[in-house]
Amino acid sequence: MLNTYRYQSLNEQDIRRLLDRNTDPSNEIQQSVTAIIDDVRINGDAALKNYAAKFDGIQLERLYLEANEIATLAASIGREQQRALEIAFANIHRFHETQQRKERVVETMPGVKCWREPRPIEKVGLYIPGGSAVLPSTLLMLGVPARIAGCKEIVVCSPPQPDGGINGYVAYCLQLLHVDRVYLVGGAQAVAAMAYGTASVPKVDKIFGPGNQYVTKAKSLVQGLTQVSIDMPAGPSEVLVIADHTANPNYVAADLLAQAEHGTDSQAVLVCTDQLLIDRVQAALDEQLAGLPRAAIAAKAIANSYAVLCDTLDEAIAFSNRYAPEHLIIEIDDWQPLLRKVMNAGSVFVGHNTPESAGDYASGTNHTLPTSGFARSYSGVSVDSFIKKITFQHITDEGLQRLGPTVEVLAELEGLQAHKNAVSIRLG
Image (cartoon, rainbow, N blue to C red; front, side, top):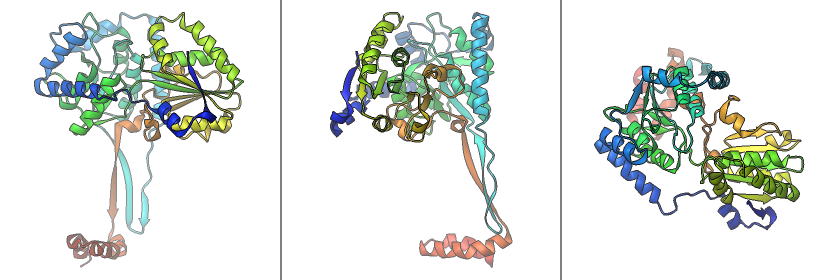
């Protein structure tokens, strides 16, 4: 059951409480993750095998599968599933390949030319969750833009299955991406392994991928402790649905539950201008929950979620922008005028026939998105996430004659004589 709040009755403190997604107020998760990171940093493969026994219930002789083992697992899935993964791969590739842009050379003044060129991040680590739900779609969302960017080494980590292998669907995606090794490591320990490197797991330059609270905390910690960067904070999943009287309550309920079934710490928020619709959505939630295999998980997430009743759509979008949802669904007839008002969201789904699950799997956009309000300052994963852009410049004799005196003056006013001399010696 969604608790319902009236927007006009909320004070600033109430709103901040609703916006808060701090899942570790007492720092217990941080303490646990810090201990895991230190263990992996010091003990390497031995620590990873111990965690596989502790968390995954399996004794591993080695921490990876190679191409022939991946091929055997990939061959175990049906042709219908293979075809679905191929379509998803093609759509994701088609969308992301358009993100490659060649920038023009700019002559800032005669004889002074400046430009930028992209270069791939050489070694990237992709974390693919595999706990309560195995996510081959995440491998496609990360692997496709990594391949398009031209990353030289792609390190994939995913928790081992009970039989010591990986999910056949993940294996098939590895083949689509031409990745011939996968590391059987999950959780915070996988992040630590990719950040520091072990005898088996290579050290990478940047770590990608969503995960639970422990994975998210590990990513934020290793970014501060090492020279490894991360894609973004991407923790427990969330959706915010803006709806009015034109929305179908069954569609809205289905969209809320699609997010809620990710985990008990997921959040599904309904922001609505119609009390009757909220009531109908509540009824639809109860009806649909009863038929879900992950009903217990979804029910707990819904219990931690809520609805906000607004007088206008402007109020609804104002609340949404403050919440900054990972996924924003706008289920109204006249959605076009609202789009320009969307300032903070990871990915937006508009109209009545655009479920968030389409973006999760196969429409083409990326589903690795910022959560917990970080959509205010982060974008979702793209080809740009896997490259860095280097600036270049070239100055001719004429250019130095024109620009040099300006540089001399600026260097002198900052008291940096050697900077001035580097120009003056050339000007003679």
